[in-house]
Length: 315
Ligand code: NCD
Image 1 (tube, rainbow, N blue to C red):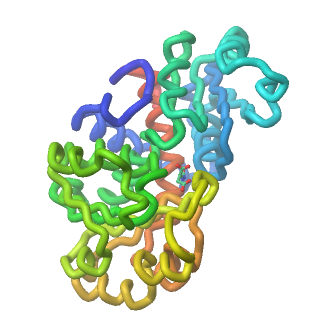
Image 2: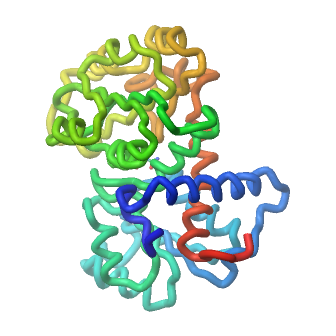
């Protein structure tokens, strides 16, 4: 594995499986009364978040703490960038304090990649604009493997605001290593440009018709959030029409389960309940949305372990 985690494209199938296997061991810590491993004692991990986050930021923080690292959170809003300091000066300042890993979320695509060229610390991309979110793809893969016992050949549909989604890009780059049968579903206005060429190169399907996609059995249905904060104009007529055509409604949930009673419902969160996903689907027995959150801690422990502790370290 590389020194940084910037993109799923940098990880081989073996790297991914090694990260997931370590995460399986780490997951066990969550069920202990004393959640503490000595693995990263004396190491410092900074979470530098220029965009809002609930699960990603707190799970990296918990992951670091459970492995005895000193973890510190810095949010863009409270940092000197709001006084006009450049991103480069901010990260160089933070890293001058002696930092081992920098977990970074930023609204600009490529930001983490650029920062990795400036600092000695291991840089972990926790979401860069509309580009990538590798730790999310890894926790999604972890959850799929946990429930289905494999990743190879899984039938996965990813539905919703593909245009603004860094999660979908990282998931495609992850799942292509396992011969997954992937279908992407979105209205034409929320399909990223160039997706047709990418789908031909990587062999996944794209459609504007969710009901058509649901007429085939699926192992995983991943719903994506409508990212209103990234939308400037009208990408769909009304919320009601979006839900009618692209929402996981109670009726579509019944169709999904009738084709495959082992189908899983995933969502990276945060959800717009009632818009892209009905409460009945979010809370269904087949929903793994909270399992994804739980896996997030284990997967992020594994990432920190592989980047900071390396071979032969005490687990
Ligand atoms: C995602 C993100 O921030 O890219 N959320 C997350 O990390 N769990 C998806 C989203 O914001 O919709």
